[in-house]
Image (cartoon, rainbow, N blue to C red):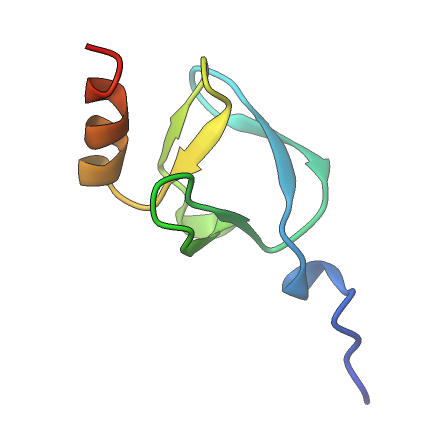
Length: 70
């Protein structure tokens, strides 16, 4: 079976980030890290900013982004 590049597993998801979890607005398999541009599979997404509504690939990148405001 041919897989289209437009299937959800090959598309970035659109999420709304809350304080304890996130809500999927547009289905997809991953989100893009706001700092590195690296794709983050939704099943391993752990770090995000509620205020900025962006995801991060690691705790280090999330901390670095938060320190930009200081």
